[in-house]
Image (cartoon, rainbow, N blue to C red; front, side):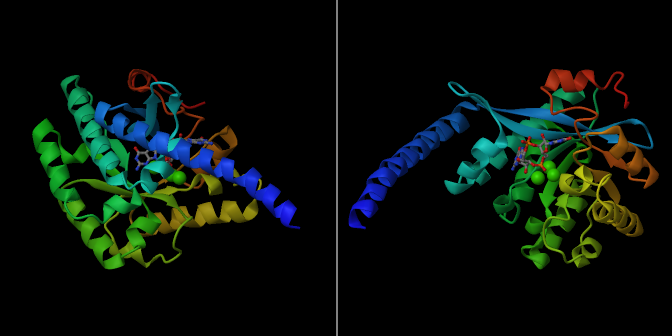
Length: 278
Ligand code: C2E
Ligand code: CA
Ligand code: CA
Ligand code: CA
């Protein structure tokens, strides 16, 4: 028995050391990446089904790692959070978004950018002031900046969350609820908070054609949003069948691979001239 245990230990420990060495290395890389600004945005269009045009771009972060190549958020955001750098990264990305908006403005392009906010940051005091500073510094209108927050973020402290969203809205910034349906199930906050757009989580959209319950959930979310006077967008639309169903249900907007994957800036902007749905 002991022998087996020992074997297990000797087998297990080197692995653990490797893992912590790997994390330590990544953490070092991460600090350098923040300093050297190795993060880039890819942009995915959101399509207005009624107007038949792109209504906004969601900015999705990628890490251009000098050795490892292009890393996806799932490969580094958990680490960023683990080492407590979420706030730093959010601020850096917020500035990047506003700076991009300023460049687009110079080129005569007036299309909103939606930025994802990590949960830890949203409740941190000083975000509003920081956003105001950035908009002033780059001479960008708040009307083209949109913040995406998840239900859990907004709801973790209802009182604070709703005050916050109220103040952002008064500044003229739009706020969307991301991954709707996957977080807290209390719907009261939708009424209390001046949210502009609700984004139906991809998990419901994926199976809506095959699964009656998912279909019913999507339908109900759309009715709910409209009843409360909010716009509703379906995420992760990949097929024409999903698109047709969402059209029938009077969904306002869609986002997903069917229209376009997240793209480098130049390719995303090229979509503005002549992007169409199948
Ligand atoms: P999210 O905000 O829910 O973003 C949507 C994710 O779904 C993106 O993955 C996008 O590439 C992917 N996606 C879009 N359309 C489709 C589709 O039709 N099918 C499928 N299978 N996937 C689709 P991505 O870029 O890997 O980002 C993952 C998550 O990382 C995001 O989920 C968001 O929570 C977080 N994230 C991304 N960028 C940022 C950022 O700049 N800041 C912060 N704080 N979080 C970010
Ligand atoms: Ca998002
Ligand atoms: Ca989402
Ligand atoms: Ca998500």
